[in-house]
Image 1 (cartoon, rainbow, N blue to C red):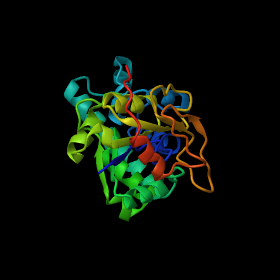
Image 2: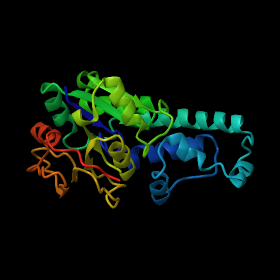
Image 3: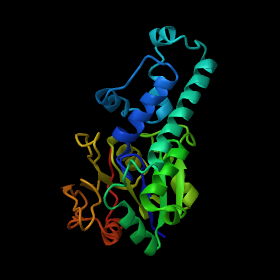
Length: 261
């Protein structure tokens, strides 16, 4: 049985600018930390996989001293965990309030894939609670229940390492050549390619200028009949008209997997 595997942030919804960034900054404020990330700051942080890992970049000796933070690794680890738990709660509330609409085509292609008998999964470096909240809002509770969710700290290395995708393949008992991934970032694309997966990229607000060499297909979104997608690159020869259909996914699965450095 084939599989369709989605990243979460930037793929299911364009969550970074209006979800994660304000959640980080509200958490910093609540903990009395002397930092607020601008959109440009956050664009740089997105090069790092994982929320706790992004927060950990704050822990310079000067920042630790100015904010009276623990200096030992265990104490700093506890502080990071507390900040990230609160940030996740804030972000989840933003999602559940309906402030982050699903990206075009997500609900439609999910229905089509389910009807065609595809395995469905999300593979993300975000916290599982955040991913579940976005997934339910994007596709509805009934379809969300059909997904396997692989998220957070369940693998040793986060994207661009392939660990999360390799775990998903093992847990779903499928081969790489039986799956298509939908990603939005160069880091996510590298992770999927390293796992041997055919990858569609739907660029998001923070990733439009990244290098997507190796992607089978690069689009503005998956698209819908009333919100057509723009094809930006079509390396595998599959070129959807107006929006991506499940037949396009099936056609992509029939193409050879290309080797990438």
